[in-house]
Image (tube, rainbow, N blue to C red):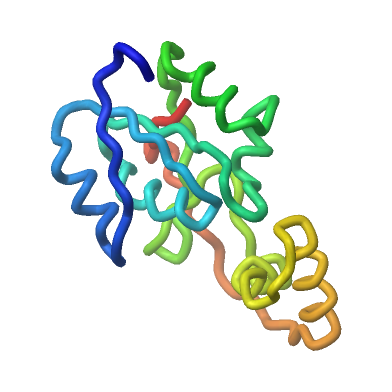
Length: 158
């Protein structure tokens, strides 16, 4: 980041990402450093703004990063995106309350994602442990309705 103007913020409490974004009315590129859950918090606050976001994978699963990046090295992603222009991507509004981009999960996958950190294991083993723990006791649920897709809803990312 030598020679570049940047600030580093740590999300310290629920709703802090929203405050950070609101304090930057000018077009800003945010770097989300964490996993899918933290990236989702960032996305919720960037929809309908002119801001951009880059997802640097430091989480357990990093599904979004795996879907959009050719490599998973956070350092390589950072270097590759510093001068790259932002491109718009679609967002999906789910249950009229939350947005997702490219990767959304429900059912057994959502249960595993929500409980993966309950198992004390190494990152790579945590998902396997969560699968084994949850698959035998998963209770199927009826899914009703459908998510609304609004073609004009877009968020910006690289």
